[in-house]
Length: 252
Ligand SMILES: Nc1ncnc2c1ncn2[C@@H]1O[C@H](COP(=O)(O)OP(=O)(O)OP(=O)(O)O)[C@@H](O)[C@H]1O
Ligand SMILES: [Mg+2]
Image (cartoon, rainbow, N blue to C red; front, top):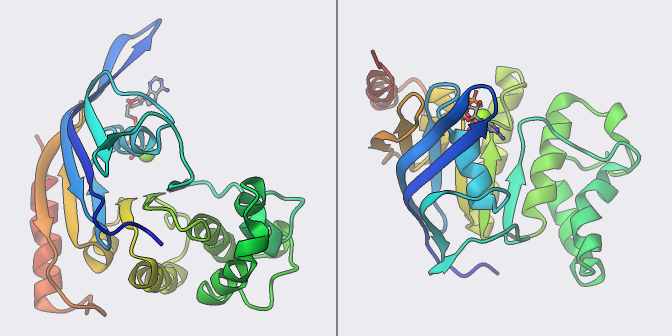
Protein backbone atom coordinates (compact mmCIF):
# COMPACT_ATOMS: atom_id res chain seq x y z
CA UNK A 1 0.00 0.00 0.00
CA UNK A 2 1.15 3.53 -0.71
CA UNK A 3 1.80 5.98 2.11
CA UNK A 4 -0.97 8.54 1.63
CA UNK A 5 0.78 11.22 3.70
CA UNK A 6 3.79 11.52 1.41
CA UNK A 7 3.89 14.59 -0.80
CA UNK A 8 5.85 15.30 -3.90
CA UNK A 9 7.43 18.75 -3.66
CA UNK A 10 9.53 20.34 -6.40
CA UNK A 11 10.96 23.81 -5.78
CA UNK A 12 12.98 26.04 -8.05
CA UNK A 13 13.97 23.21 -10.37
CA UNK A 14 16.56 24.08 -12.99
CA UNK A 15 18.02 21.91 -15.75
CA UNK A 16 20.62 23.13 -18.22
CA UNK A 17 21.88 20.87 -20.99
CA UNK A 18 25.41 21.33 -22.27
CA UNK A 19 25.64 21.03 -25.99
CA UNK A 20 29.02 21.07 -27.70
CA UNK A 21 27.65 22.97 -30.70
CA UNK A 22 24.81 25.08 -29.32
CA UNK A 23 26.35 25.80 -25.92
CA UNK A 24 24.26 25.73 -22.77
CA UNK A 25 20.57 25.14 -23.25
CA UNK A 26 18.33 26.15 -20.37
CA UNK A 27 15.46 23.66 -20.53
CA UNK A 28 13.70 24.29 -17.23
CA UNK A 29 14.10 26.98 -14.58
CA UNK A 30 12.42 28.03 -11.32
CA UNK A 31 9.86 25.31 -11.77
CA UNK A 32 7.64 24.50 -8.77
CA UNK A 33 5.14 21.71 -8.32
CA UNK A 34 3.42 20.03 -5.38
CA UNK A 35 1.24 16.96 -5.56
CA UNK A 36 -0.56 14.69 -3.12
CA UNK A 37 -1.68 11.09 -3.21
CA UNK A 38 -4.87 10.47 -5.13
CA UNK A 39 -4.25 13.54 -7.27
CA UNK A 40 -3.76 13.69 -11.02
CA UNK A 41 -1.70 16.72 -12.02
CA UNK A 42 -1.50 17.44 -15.75
CA UNK A 43 1.44 19.31 -17.29
CA UNK A 44 0.75 21.25 -20.46
CA UNK A 45 3.11 23.50 -22.36
CA UNK A 46 4.70 24.11 -25.75
CA UNK A 47 6.98 21.50 -27.27
CA UNK A 48 10.49 21.67 -25.84
CA UNK A 49 9.51 23.48 -22.61
CA UNK A 50 10.94 20.77 -20.38
CA UNK A 51 7.95 18.58 -19.51
CA UNK A 52 9.66 15.25 -20.22
CA UNK A 53 12.81 16.63 -18.60
CA UNK A 54 10.85 17.29 -15.41
CA UNK A 55 9.34 13.79 -15.40
CA UNK A 56 12.81 12.31 -15.83
CA UNK A 57 14.04 14.32 -12.85
CA UNK A 58 11.15 13.07 -10.70
CA UNK A 59 11.86 9.53 -11.89
CA UNK A 60 15.48 9.99 -10.77
CA UNK A 61 16.79 9.26 -14.28
CA UNK A 62 18.42 12.70 -14.50
CA UNK A 63 19.78 15.32 -12.12
CA UNK A 64 18.78 18.96 -11.73
CA UNK A 65 21.41 21.69 -11.39
CA UNK A 66 19.26 23.74 -9.10
CA UNK A 67 16.28 23.46 -6.78
CA UNK A 68 15.02 20.41 -4.93
CA UNK A 69 12.64 17.54 -5.58
CA UNK A 70 11.47 15.60 -2.55
CA UNK A 71 8.98 12.81 -1.99
CA UNK A 72 7.85 12.26 1.59
CA UNK A 73 10.51 14.79 2.64
CA UNK A 74 13.36 12.80 1.09
CA UNK A 75 15.33 14.08 -1.84
CA UNK A 76 15.02 12.05 -5.02
CA UNK A 77 18.50 10.84 -5.89
CA UNK A 78 17.98 8.01 -8.35
CA UNK A 79 15.40 5.69 -9.86
CA UNK A 80 13.15 3.55 -7.69
CA UNK A 81 10.33 1.07 -8.16
CA UNK A 82 8.29 3.49 -6.11
CA UNK A 83 8.21 5.85 -9.12
CA UNK A 84 6.83 4.31 -12.30
CA UNK A 85 7.27 5.84 -15.75
CA UNK A 86 5.06 5.22 -18.78
CA UNK A 87 6.89 6.60 -21.80
CA UNK A 88 5.33 7.97 -24.94
CA UNK A 89 6.60 5.07 -27.00
CA UNK A 90 5.43 1.84 -25.43
CA UNK A 91 8.49 -0.32 -24.92
CA UNK A 92 7.10 -3.79 -24.43
CA UNK A 93 9.36 -6.83 -24.56
CA UNK A 94 8.47 -8.37 -27.93
CA UNK A 95 9.51 -11.88 -26.88
CA UNK A 96 7.24 -11.91 -23.82
CA UNK A 97 3.47 -12.42 -23.67
CA UNK A 98 1.14 -9.72 -22.32
CA UNK A 99 1.03 -11.49 -18.98
CA UNK A 100 4.80 -11.84 -18.77
CA UNK A 101 5.36 -8.23 -19.82
CA UNK A 102 3.16 -7.13 -16.94
CA UNK A 103 4.86 -9.52 -14.51
CA UNK A 104 8.40 -8.60 -15.63
CA UNK A 105 9.12 -5.90 -13.04
CA UNK A 106 7.76 -7.99 -10.18
CA UNK A 107 9.98 -10.89 -11.25
CA UNK A 108 13.01 -8.60 -11.55
CA UNK A 109 12.41 -7.51 -7.95
CA UNK A 110 11.90 -11.08 -6.78
CA UNK A 111 8.39 -10.38 -5.48
CA UNK A 112 6.40 -12.14 -8.20
CA UNK A 113 5.41 -15.17 -6.07
CA UNK A 114 3.79 -12.99 -3.39
CA UNK A 115 2.18 -10.62 -5.90
CA UNK A 116 1.05 -13.05 -8.59
CA UNK A 117 -2.63 -12.21 -8.09
CA UNK A 118 -1.91 -8.57 -8.87
CA UNK A 119 -0.94 -9.44 -12.43
CA UNK A 120 -4.38 -10.94 -13.14
CA UNK A 121 -6.03 -8.04 -11.33
CA UNK A 122 -4.23 -5.59 -13.67
CA UNK A 123 -5.16 -7.64 -16.73
CA UNK A 124 -8.82 -7.50 -15.70
CA UNK A 125 -8.81 -3.81 -14.69
CA UNK A 126 -7.18 -2.75 -17.96
CA UNK A 127 -9.54 -4.76 -20.16
CA UNK A 128 -6.88 -7.23 -21.33
CA UNK A 129 -8.69 -10.39 -20.24
CA UNK A 130 -8.36 -13.09 -22.90
CA UNK A 131 -5.11 -11.66 -24.26
CA UNK A 132 -2.81 -12.92 -21.50
CA UNK A 133 -0.95 -15.25 -23.85
CA UNK A 134 -0.74 -12.85 -26.81
CA UNK A 135 2.57 -11.33 -27.89
CA UNK A 136 2.99 -7.57 -28.46
CA UNK A 137 2.91 -7.99 -32.26
CA UNK A 138 -0.49 -9.67 -31.95
CA UNK A 139 -2.23 -6.84 -30.10
CA UNK A 140 -3.46 -3.38 -31.12
CA UNK A 141 -1.79 -0.06 -30.26
CA UNK A 142 -4.49 0.61 -27.69
CA UNK A 143 -3.84 -2.72 -26.03
CA UNK A 144 -0.09 -2.10 -26.03
CA UNK A 145 -0.73 1.19 -24.23
CA UNK A 146 -2.86 -0.69 -21.70
CA UNK A 147 -0.08 -3.22 -21.12
CA UNK A 148 2.44 -0.40 -20.58
CA UNK A 149 0.11 1.23 -18.04
CA UNK A 150 -0.53 -2.11 -16.31
CA UNK A 151 3.25 -2.76 -16.14
CA UNK A 152 3.59 0.39 -14.08
CA UNK A 153 0.51 0.10 -11.85
CA UNK A 154 1.28 -3.54 -11.01
CA UNK A 155 4.26 -2.35 -8.94
CA UNK A 156 1.99 -0.14 -6.78
CA UNK A 157 4.35 2.84 -7.02
CA UNK A 158 3.78 5.97 -4.96
CA UNK A 159 4.28 8.16 -8.02
CA UNK A 160 3.23 7.43 -11.60
CA UNK A 161 4.68 9.51 -14.41
CA UNK A 162 2.73 9.43 -17.67
CA UNK A 163 4.47 11.06 -20.64
CA UNK A 164 1.77 11.34 -23.30
CA UNK A 165 1.01 7.62 -23.12
CA UNK A 166 -2.19 7.95 -25.16
CA UNK A 167 -1.12 10.44 -27.83
CA UNK A 168 -0.70 7.85 -30.59
CA UNK A 169 -4.21 6.45 -30.13
CA UNK A 170 -7.50 7.30 -31.80
CA UNK A 171 -9.95 9.44 -29.81
CA UNK A 172 -12.30 6.56 -29.06
CA UNK A 173 -9.62 4.25 -27.62
CA UNK A 174 -8.09 7.16 -25.76
CA UNK A 175 -11.40 7.96 -24.03
CA UNK A 176 -11.75 4.35 -22.87
CA UNK A 177 -8.20 4.20 -21.49
CA UNK A 178 -8.65 7.56 -19.77
CA UNK A 179 -11.52 5.99 -17.80
CA UNK A 180 -9.39 2.94 -17.03
CA UNK A 181 -6.63 5.15 -15.64
CA UNK A 182 -9.18 7.02 -13.50
CA UNK A 183 -10.43 3.67 -12.18
CA UNK A 184 -6.86 2.66 -11.28
CA UNK A 185 -6.30 6.01 -9.59
CA UNK A 186 -9.41 5.55 -7.41
CA UNK A 187 -8.25 2.11 -6.43
CA UNK A 188 -4.53 2.62 -5.77
CA UNK A 189 -4.32 6.38 -5.11
CA UNK A 190 -0.80 7.11 -6.34
CA UNK A 191 0.37 10.61 -7.22
CA UNK A 192 -0.06 10.84 -11.00
CA UNK A 193 1.81 13.41 -13.10
CA UNK A 194 0.59 13.35 -16.66
CA UNK A 195 2.10 15.22 -19.59
CA UNK A 196 -0.36 15.76 -22.40
CA UNK A 197 -0.81 18.01 -25.42
CA UNK A 198 -4.51 17.40 -25.31
CA UNK A 199 -6.31 20.10 -23.31
CA UNK A 200 -9.51 18.07 -23.31
CA UNK A 201 -7.67 15.08 -21.85
CA UNK A 202 -6.20 17.29 -19.12
CA UNK A 203 -9.61 18.74 -18.16
CA UNK A 204 -11.23 15.30 -18.29
CA UNK A 205 -8.67 13.59 -16.08
CA UNK A 206 -6.75 16.02 -13.92
CA UNK A 207 -7.47 17.63 -10.57
CA UNK A 208 -5.09 20.43 -11.48
CA UNK A 209 -3.53 21.52 -14.75
CA UNK A 210 -0.13 23.19 -14.60
CA UNK A 211 0.69 25.30 -17.64
CA UNK A 212 4.34 25.88 -18.55
CA UNK A 213 5.87 28.70 -20.56
CA UNK A 214 7.85 28.08 -23.75
CA UNK A 215 11.52 27.16 -23.18
CA UNK A 216 13.07 27.84 -20.81
CA UNK A 217 10.04 26.31 -19.15
CA UNK A 218 8.67 27.61 -15.88
CA UNK A 219 5.23 27.91 -14.28
CA UNK A 220 2.87 30.01 -16.40
CA UNK A 221 -0.26 29.26 -14.39
CA UNK A 222 -2.47 26.65 -12.86
CA UNK A 223 -6.12 25.70 -13.31
CA UNK A 224 -7.99 23.70 -10.69
CA UNK A 225 -10.54 21.27 -12.14
CA UNK A 226 -13.22 20.93 -9.51
CA UNK A 227 -15.71 18.78 -11.40
CA UNK A 228 -16.96 15.39 -10.19
CA UNK A 229 -16.32 12.29 -12.34
CA UNK A 230 -17.51 11.21 -14.85
CA UNK A 231 -17.02 14.61 -16.43
CA UNK A 232 -19.28 15.81 -19.19
CA UNK A 233 -16.96 16.91 -22.00
CA UNK A 234 -19.58 19.16 -23.57
CA UNK A 235 -20.88 20.89 -20.44
CA UNK A 236 -20.43 24.69 -20.32
CA UNK A 237 -18.19 24.32 -17.25
CA UNK A 238 -15.89 21.86 -19.04
CA UNK A 239 -15.64 24.06 -22.11
CA UNK A 240 -14.96 27.13 -19.97
CA UNK A 241 -12.06 25.31 -18.30
CA UNK A 242 -10.66 24.41 -21.72
CA UNK A 243 -10.80 28.07 -22.67
CA UNK A 244 -9.03 29.13 -19.47
CA UNK A 245 -6.15 26.78 -20.28
CA UNK A 246 -6.04 27.81 -23.93
CA UNK A 247 -5.81 31.46 -22.86
CA UNK A 248 -2.87 30.63 -20.59
CA UNK A 249 -1.13 28.93 -23.51
CA UNK A 250 -1.23 32.03 -25.67
CA UNK A 251 2.34 33.24 -25.49
CA UNK A 252 3.77 35.91 -27.70
N1 LIG B 1 19.64 14.82 -22.99
C1 LIG B 1 19.52 16.02 -23.56
N2 LIG B 1 20.58 16.66 -24.06
C2 LIG B 1 20.47 17.89 -24.61
N3 LIG B 1 19.31 18.58 -24.68
C3 LIG B 1 18.21 17.99 -24.19
C4 LIG B 1 18.25 16.68 -23.61
N4 LIG B 1 17.00 16.36 -23.21
C5 LIG B 1 16.22 17.41 -23.53
N5 LIG B 1 16.94 18.39 -24.12
C6 LIG B 1 16.42 19.69 -24.57
O1 LIG B 1 15.71 20.26 -23.51
C7 LIG B 1 14.52 20.89 -23.97
C8 LIG B 1 13.31 20.32 -23.26
O2 LIG B 1 13.12 19.00 -23.72
P1 LIG B 1 11.90 18.10 -23.24
O3 LIG B 1 12.02 16.80 -23.91
O4 LIG B 1 11.83 18.11 -21.76
O5 LIG B 1 10.66 18.94 -23.83
P2 LIG B 1 9.11 18.62 -23.76
O6 LIG B 1 8.44 19.75 -23.06
O7 LIG B 1 8.89 17.27 -23.22
O8 LIG B 1 8.70 18.70 -25.31
P3 LIG B 1 7.65 17.82 -26.17
O9 LIG B 1 6.32 18.42 -25.85
O10 LIG B 1 8.04 18.08 -27.57
O11 LIG B 1 7.78 16.40 -25.77
C9 LIG B 1 14.50 20.69 -25.47
O12 LIG B 1 15.00 21.84 -26.11
C10 LIG B 1 15.44 19.52 -25.70
O13 LIG B 1 16.09 19.63 -26.93
MG1 LIG C 1 8.23 15.47 -24.07
